[in-house]
Length: 253
Length: 288
Image (cartoon, rainbow over all chains, first blue to last red; front, side):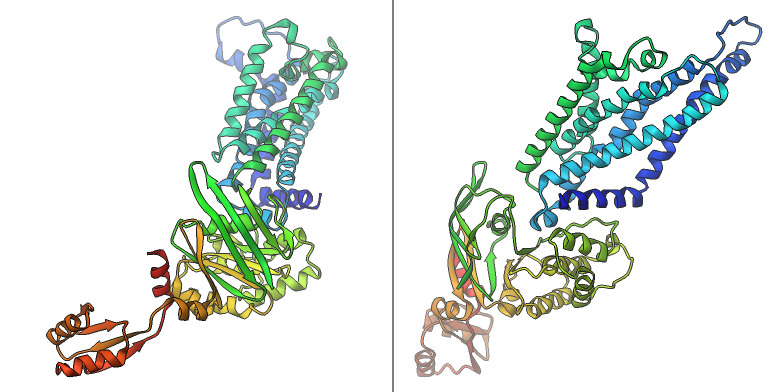
């Protein structure tokens, strides 16, 4: 436990000094601002582009703002985070920084858990930061009643991060290359997306947690309708972390 | 009493058998020179002692307790190229190490160690350190929790002569606090500070024991005769059954008898010097 806390603290210091936290915060802040702004400005932009043409556009609503937010988070945000977390274990293996610490009694499991916790913290903070900004601007620009459950809609995506980051950490442990984590994550995401084409697996598929946010937002789906996917996500994350620990235990430092 | 004992240790990587029944014993309080060619298995042996690698077979005992993979206690380690988190200062890194090992009075101890190894106690980050400074930080980190034993894996191989001399002096100065196992292929380093030596070759320790005793037992006394001309040296070499190098002939036979033989043939050396037995001689004899 002590080793875990020390490595986590060290991760926080290094992330701050290597400007990783600042960059992540800025990127996600930008996403947060961009989502409601795009929803607000799109009709005006299209009108200015299509001068002389008659374009009929629906009035922008809060749902459009949130739609843009989830698009940003699932199509870019998840992958930005994957890039940041992808080298977290592999860099240590490459540079040999763990040798002295493990020789001093640091448990390898503690390394995996600390790295995972750090990645999860970054995900939660980045997501909430972007969410807070989008929430505030959406409420300001679109004071309608069309998005009654913004908090509820966020949970599945937040929960998906639990599995997503476990996969990235596993990939980062498997190889000394800093890209393996990212590639494994991208591969699994693609596989799960293809699997979602089968309706029968939809409610079990973790990737549903990144697709059904708008349905939860507008109240057309209930939070617990995705319960099997939450369970599979958690089980998958536990399995990936257990595997990562096993791999690191056997790896030559 | 032996602090560290390796008995019939075997270790292979794939089809390559690195250690073949290695037996090694390091007495408490010794500075043990662990000598071998590059790739002989010195680093592997050290990693096995630290529990960083699983054993294939055999046993390792440290302070009476068996060493198991993934469990290390009471051994300080300085790798050949120590790697640190470059964005930490020396104090921050040592504090991290000290908190891992529950070192008491850590703040004072870190200051003490930085002073001992001659590193500044400033906010300067490790990535700006020279090789020598990194080695000194490594020894500070290895000694921080007052380990019963210190393992140094080729610590001087990347240092310049001045850095090497400083480092060896530092190592000798901590000798009273800890038993040291120094792995190296630089034999002069071993001769300078070690009192015990073991030579690893072909996966086994070929000889081990007190350095002076080994030198006495394994190396023959030799004498170097110097002649006025190379021709004289050549003639003398033929007479003594030795090989001439320029104007010098080295013989391992009884010096008095050799000199008598030379004088009988009117060959007068301009100088003759007994050659001190060296670790290099011993090493070459062992690995031949």
